Image 1 (cartoon, helix red, strand yellow):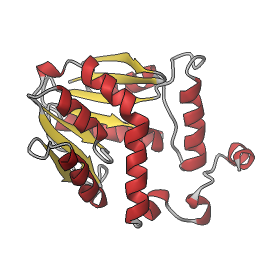
Image 2: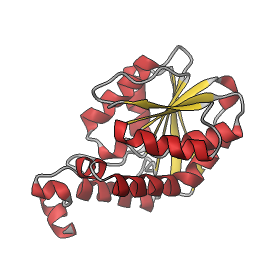
Image 3: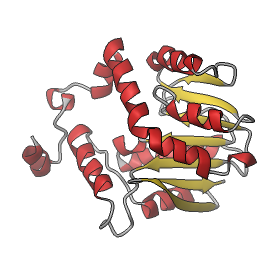
Image 4: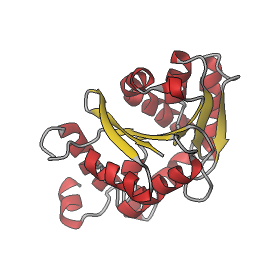
Length: 226
C-alpha cells in the first residue's frame, strides 16, 4: 500500500481499519514481548555507543522514557556502576521490563515507572532519554514531549534523544529518510527529524545548550542541557 500512502498521506496499518497499532499490541502479551525484544535488538548498537559516549560521570540518576524491554537502562547501568534509574512505559510493559532487568542482576538499581507520557508527569531524574519513540508522533506531540522533559529535569540535567537522526541537508542518512517514510505508513502524523529540527524544539522550551553527536551507523543522539 505504499502508493496509496504516498497519494493520501494516511497510514496503512491497523489505523486503516479504524484500529490502533499499540492498542492491539498491548492487548496481546505474547506479541508485546516479541515486539519489545525486537526493539532491544534494533537499538543495541546505539545504546552501547551511548553508554560510552555520553558523560554519565556528571550525573547520578537516569530514566529511559518509552523504555520497552529496558535495553538502554541495562547497557548504561552495566557500564557505570554509580548510576541508578530505570524505565518509564505503559503498565503492560512492566513485567517484561522487570524480567529482563532481573535476568541481568540489576533489579536493585533499575526500576520500572508505569505511566503514559502524555497523561502523566515524567519521572524526576538527572538525565531523561527518549529513543525511537518521538518519530511515531506528529509535530505538536513531539514538542509537548520535549517540554515535559524540560519540566521534569533539574537545572543542569540532560535530555538525550536518539534515533536515526536525519542529516540537516537531508542528503546522507538514507536509513533515516526511509524510516520517516515508514512512519508515514505506520502512523497518522509521525516522521523522523533532522538534528537541527530537534535542537530548535529543545531551545524553544528552554534548553540552554544543545548538540548532536553521532553514535553508530545511522544513529545519532541530540542532547539538550537545561
